[in-house]
Image 1 (cartoon, rainbow, N blue to C red):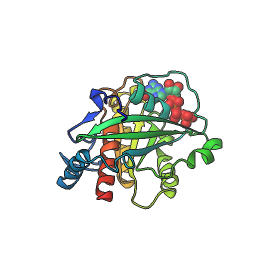
Image 2 (tube, protein in one colour; image 1 turned 180 degrees about the vertical axis):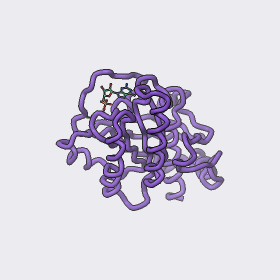
Image 3 (tube, rainbow, N blue to C red; image 1 turned 90 degrees about the vertical axis):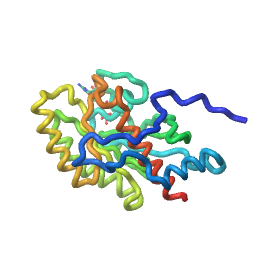
Image 4 (cartoon, rainbow, N blue to C red; image 1 turned 90 degrees about the horizontal axis):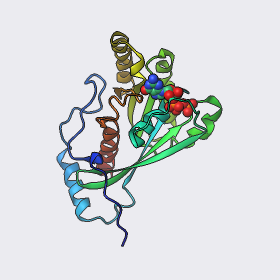
Amino acid sequence: MHFSPPVSRDRIISTFPKCYNPQACLQMKDDWNTKAKMACQDRAAHQQGFDRLKMSKAVVVGDLNVGKTCLINRFCKDVFERDYKATIGVDFEIERFEISGLPCSLQIWDTAGQEKFKCIASAYYRGAQVIITVFDMADIKSLEQTQQWLKEALQENEPDSCFVFMVGTKRDLLSAEECQRTESDAIKIAAEMNAEFWSVSSKTGENIQDNVHLCKCCVVLSKLMWVCYFR
Ligand SMILES: Nc1nc2c(ncn2[C@@H]2O[C@H](COP(=O)(O)OP(=O)(O)OP(=O)(O)O)[C@@H](O)[C@H]2O)c(=O)[nH]1
């Protein structure tokens, strides 16, 4: 019989994660709905068939140099790399969680922002439950590009099958006023995209390291989706 090592404490999710801003938020609930909760309990009790379902997929897209790799590295390894190394094609990490008593893994696909790698990266968009569009809060042009990135990622997936997040990175580079202005622009676009907005810094770990709400949201939402879908 195969036993997996225990999930680390900060990956055990028993309460529903809060959103960053209620104007660009995917859900305002405090808890899982009863049906999903019961489905989790039921599956935890009868693990049969669970192996086939336990993996969720998140793809991270956005312009080059916006900080996609740093976001993933901060979340998965709690490190920050100052020197830029372009992602060639794609890369991925797997994070293990326990949600409402049920083991679950999240594949986080890091894709290249450079145009020349786009055709390789886009081949990995398919089958995503979560699309995370990333922009650099210090570069407003990258915010304008998020809609195009989302469009391309959605083209590879079934309509209405993905939860969308928009993440502004590098908030440590902005003053409080600049941050507020950029956030307010981003929230408008996120609302149009039906995306949940988060503003983070991979350098300081703000909104990534201390509270892992963003990725908790990804897992919980993708989990909710399959629980409802497969029942
Ligand atoms: N100050 C600051 N710099 C950051 C932050 N996140 C990323 N950077 C820097 O931005 C540069 C690009 O980061 P990456 O994560 O490699 O960017 P990327 O989006 O993965 O780039 P591609 O692989 O080309 O698509 C690096 O030099 C990072 O050190 C942040 O939160 N704050």
